Length: 177
Image 1 (cartoon, rainbow, N blue to C red):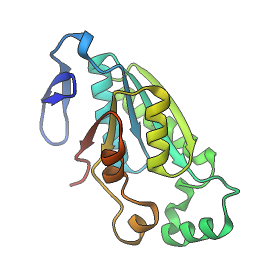
Image 2 (image 1 turned 45 degrees about the vertical axis):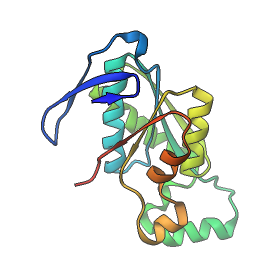
Image 3 (image 1 turned 180 degrees about the horizontal axis):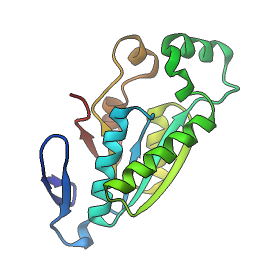
Image 4 (image 1 turned 90 degrees about the vertical axis):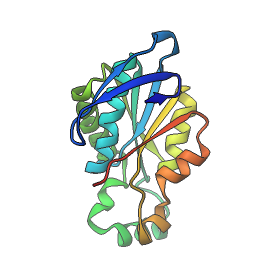
């Protein structure tokens, strides 16, 4: 598989993959960014990003977006009504910091050696694209699971929007099924 400037060899079945860089390191990715919301689906994308970062010797930056606790009450109330039990994942920096810590452990188990974590205030797509710019990333990894129905209309489809607007290579990882 050719991913940007790095040719990767992926072996294994649908549950387990091993990634090995097979091109010279001068063309390898240097900074890989991946977003997570703490869901199992997003953690699968984190693991794949960890494999790629580890195989290419890249720094992996794991980001989680959150809404500030002092956000507009109507916007916050609307998000909480729609997301119900999952609302804790998007409000305040503390849950986001817990989320990226858990994701970092998953990435390291998958092979990432240099991992940084960021809890970023803002919408998921804007936060990811901001991290890509600030970190001068050459690869953004997202899961293929968009938000369907009302959740998607409220928060947007992260994979679709990030792919369309990113200034670097984007890898969409099949994380469902």
